[in-house]
Every structure is written in structure tokens, then in C-alpha cells.
Image (tube, rainbow, N blue to C red; front, side, top):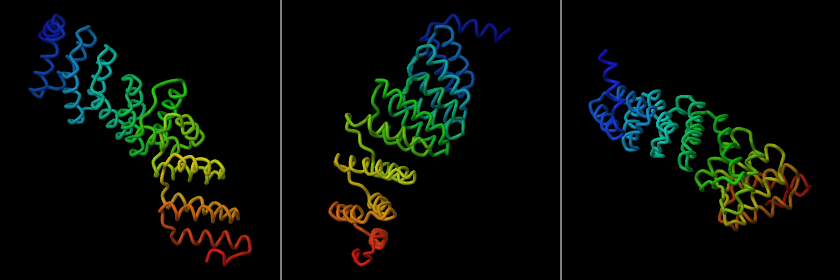
Length: 279
């Protein structure tokens, strides 16, 4: 009877009073009850203010009470609330690290995530080994971009490419790279190497060369490892002239040739019956 009376009194409160009550309960360490009051307020057109929600969500997450934090976030956003993106991202990342990929992806769709939130979630999924989930989210973000959605910023762009490549979606990564040309987004040197490795491993050397040339033409500085990857690919195909040309470009770019470079050039020269050229 006392519980019923308590909830009846909550239902008579205005939204500011609900916010104050949630704040008081959280400050007293009664976060479970605070979550119940917040959810009830959201479901009864008594939407608590965003700072109240953010403070409670942060406390629940720090205490490892992810179920309650997820429930609060869902109720708050379904009622029209807008939370701090950092809090939303931190909760989704925590869920991803626990292997709760589908729940994290569902929350991502619910909160209309910004670039930073999406990048944090993709990074957390990759770090947790949830490669398939990261690939699925990156694919959805790429489809949104092609459909006229908001363009990713540079950090999100790079982690999207990494997610697509690591989940075996190299063709989608290539499409994303092409679609971003007008926005002047450029993959990082690390992402470029992953792209090149994916194309070379699939036997698509021309596609790798196209990506490499586009990267260099946009002012990018490939790593020595990326140069060596392509030089080695040319060497295995017996394309000595291309291997040597790339080695000269490597030296002029400031990326120092190493023993791998020399061995690749030796293989390319030997394949054309001129083993002494590399020397």
C-alpha cells in the first residue's frame, strides 16, 4: 500500500519535481530507485531534464549497472529527451565491451548518434573483437552517406574503413572511399595500409594502385610498409619496371627503403633475368 501511495505521489509531480527527486535519490546512493522514478516520469509525460538523466546514467555505468542505464537511456530518448552524446557513447561502448553488440547497435539507432558517438562505438566493437557488428554498423553508416545523410568527419571515416575491411567488406570500403572524394576525406596511413593489404590479398593489384595513387595525389604520405607491400606485389608478378619506379618514389618521399625493399627488387629483377639490376 505504501509503495502504491509513493508512486501515486510521483505521478502527481511536475517534470521539474521528478528531476529533483531523481537527483536526490542518486545523491543518496539509491540509484536503482532513481532509475525507476526516471523511467516512470518518461513514460508519464514528466520528462526529467537532460542533466538529471546524464548524471544518473553516468553513475549507473560507473557502478556497472548497464541494464538499468540502458533502460533509462531507452525511456529517456523514446520520450523525446536528448542526452549528452558522450554519455550515450560511453554506455554503448561499455555494452560492446561486454559482447552485447545488438543492444549497443539498437541504442545507436535510437539516439540518432553523432560522428563522435558512432566512432566510439565502432572502436569499442573492434577492440572487443565484435568485427561483424562493427562491419554492419559501418555498412549502415555508409548507406546513409550514399543516401544523402550527414558526412562523417575524419576520425569516423577512418574507423568506418577499418571496420568494413576487417569484416570482409572490401568492396564497400572502396565505395566509401570513392564517395568521400568530394569531401576531401583521406584515410590515415594506417588505414591506407589495411586497404592496400586487402586488395593485394584478393589479387586486385590495379585497385590497390588506384587507391595508393589517389592517396598520394591528395597529399598523403604512405608508410614504408605500404610502399613495400606494393613493390612486393609487383615483384611477384614480375613487373620489374613498376617495382623499380615505386622504389624510386619511395626514396624521394622520405620513406627509407629497407631490406624488404631490396629483396623485392631482387625478386623482380630475377624474374626478368636481370638479377644484378637491384644492386
